Length: 271
Ligand SMILES: [Zn+2]
Image (cartoon, rainbow, N blue to C red; front, top):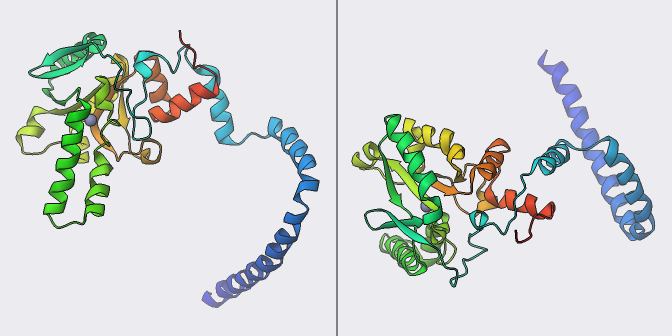
């Protein structure tokens, strides 16, 4: 039995191996005549694209058609990440939400409604971090690097490990006043803090499930590290408004991907 299976496999491997070589050399000769064939290739691909869109293209068409009537210039869609540092002249209407903690006053009502709903559902949510100035971020960032260096890592390693979770000063979404880090008090009291494993807790599932109803998104989801530049954070939520949040949740997007989609649709005007 084993032998019979083995023989065709070996033969197949051999065939594949043989096919590879001539294909490579054909490609090389083709590249010199590419300019001649390119126009007809474009026509062909245009003709076929109408009838056979890839699943990704179909999904994108569907998303573009469903985009809400918003603009990338809306205050609640401001994008701040390591590639888009905040404009430090931007004036944010801050308001105190908890002891020495501030958020953008425009999100006070949705935030408080959300937290009231949380306590009604039996969850005691603790606001670990909200608005943070660029200076404060600089201190956090430098402290983290120093801590890793003290533990014996090189400066390069320490910087890399820091940047997995801590945005470079100016690149933190906490500068906008629209981001909140949340864990429940039980989790905090058990000595655990802002770690990905907070997602083993029921309160975290509740936050993720209800966030969009109040205009928030889980900002750094799993498997979106490439788009966001930040590792998975089970505790960091960001206000974007209800219609944006619902769209982002429905299509499982990172904020960066959503903004890109809005740009593609030309939704970039001042409103
Ligand atoms: Zn955060």
